[in-house]
Image (cartoon, rainbow, N blue to C red):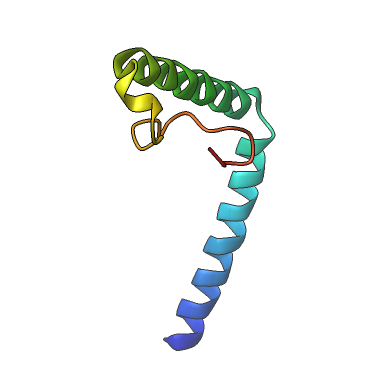
Length: 72
């Protein structure tokens, strides 16, 4: 029983790796990643517009807006 479970697990991990590699090689993944990046930019712009002047002081309200590298 243990050997069969081990074989099944090994085959399942190998198949999921192949499926993930196939997904990453498609244009659907790159389009979804691009849409996510555009959504984050739109969200950060909305946060900036709603904050106005009071949020400029400390950056606590600017969680969605970060410079490259993640440092405020």
